[in-house]
Image (cartoon, rainbow, N blue to C red; front, side, top):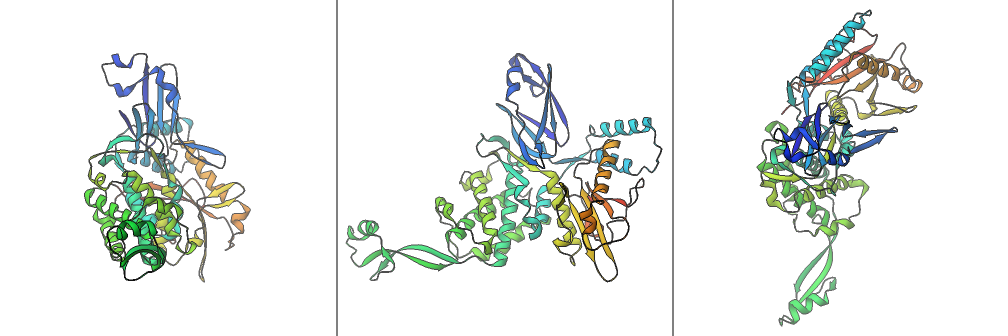
Length: 478
């Protein structure tokens, strides 16, 4: 039995001493003795602060579950799970727009209370749209400078019992498949790695390498094939253990994509990527013993192999090494969580790179750190006509109470006053511009190219502040 939530939504479970006697919706009740089993998963610890995948508040009569900044699925108690889906509430985003557009410096306490009440009510409205995280991942993985930061986006607990779901509810598998195919595309673009690998062959009238005595006796001596010899020798080429492993996972991915077209629409470009990869692996075998890959030594020049093999192992484990499971309607998944604020940061990073092809990742200074602070982006650019320096804070989920929004604005303004930030070249006179980037659930993501161009970043000023701006980035929707 599952509890389905979207981000930043609470669900109340009433406590009972006899769960089996309840005749109404059992999803709204919880047996008293199971409360101790609820232990929210800790996703990460960052700068001394613990981040949990969801929150839990227990009182005498009820348990309140509060989803947070992560989407995924996990066990709540024995037999019950919590599933947080990647859905944005449009009304909540509109409430943020209304608050930051207020220019009245003398706003009354009553007006603030009304704004906070309106913002709280907007979270309960069901004007939600599901974010297409596969399209977001594809955009991120298209830029090598961004792809290297995607390692910590995902947490998977392979040790826990799997949770039964339908194929349509599965987010983990398409996420892994897209990441693997994009890594494989990068590998093919650079060229498959060549290395020495062992070949065993039953040769006729000749010997090469070393003779495998045991196999020679079984295959040839006992069968009176005295002119044949079973030999093992090394060959230098592309048909190595690593490439054969990647080919095997690639075949799984093809099967999965063909049977789950709802995840992989034409605009996602996945069929094109599959066809781009195919010629490079045509002469590579898919026969590989999985234990062999454990002894794979990573070459720094082919750094994509390390991550691709890790994701490939996840995919095979996901299907229990059985390719027929890619077509099943009802499946099971290990508990997993995806860090959506981090994903939004990287999506914005990819958008900035795409909209400004003349700039490199160095101009954007992702996660610029100083004095225990970490800026999402510090844009530093100079040409013959103009010097540009902008502090950017990406807010996937802005806190929608009036005071908390202004606290976030003051935080990004404080970053712009750090000496290390002001000392980065180019040195500019006057105040450094601050920009808050937030999500807008609109399907036309092509508009991001114009908005994220460095010349257009500071078009919308927050009226109550000087040199503080806002920018909504359109997110792809299912």
